Length: 322
View 1 (cartoon, helix red, strand yellow):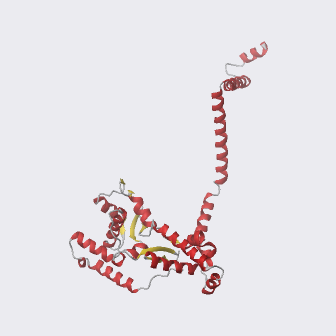
View 2 (cartoon, helix red, strand yellow):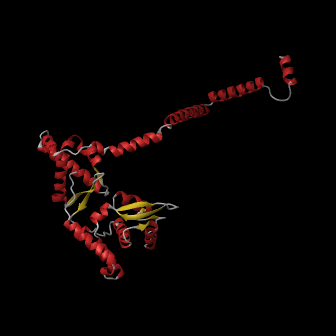
View 3 (cartoon, one colour):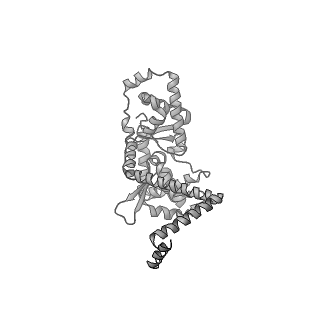
């Protein structure tokens, strides 16, 4: 023991590895004794070790799964886009054979479910995709899908005063148009629904500016009306989100990036639903009253409004059985 102590002293002032490890071991033992004698410390220590083990497992799992996240998300997106391609529109003969497998009550029940699905979606003005309709509602009745849609369209027309319209024949998107609105389908500016007024103002600006407007024009116009897109509004909340997300998803507006702009800029256009529901001649009358001018003084807009209204009245309704 004396010899070991002298050897240690003779090797310089630095602590040797053997002694350093012994000091660490003693400290660790002292810590363990304190934890054993003090239940609170013991609990904290156990929880700390458990948390550390959990974090380690989480890091390992994240490392294992992070190698293919983009590939998986791309695959899911592709599957989502291709969902509707797996559905083949049944022929007339297939529909007839399919109807033989179901009772009249079953077909009526499925039609009622489709009607209810559309009405729920229409509350938020969200277009309905055929792929979602077949997957979530029609299901095993897909062989008689055209017949179900035909009956649903008749129900909307005769019971609810709605017109079922396919606004996107490529992606098969449907909306409901209220046939009981004012003349030419113009939306009523209802004080209890401020968003309708906000939308009407934006559509009016886009129409009067020739159908395409840079977004800064819209934001400046709204700011003059004390609706600042950079601040939270008491009625609309996040104004920018309502305009660029909600109105776009509802297909009232198109929000398109302008190529080769730095910083990135966007422009607004009328969406498919707006072209179906909103009367340009009503907008022109509204602008005439606002500026105390004859609507015909805007010759280009006047021709477009009346040309659109006459052509839409002469065209047949869009098929809703696709």
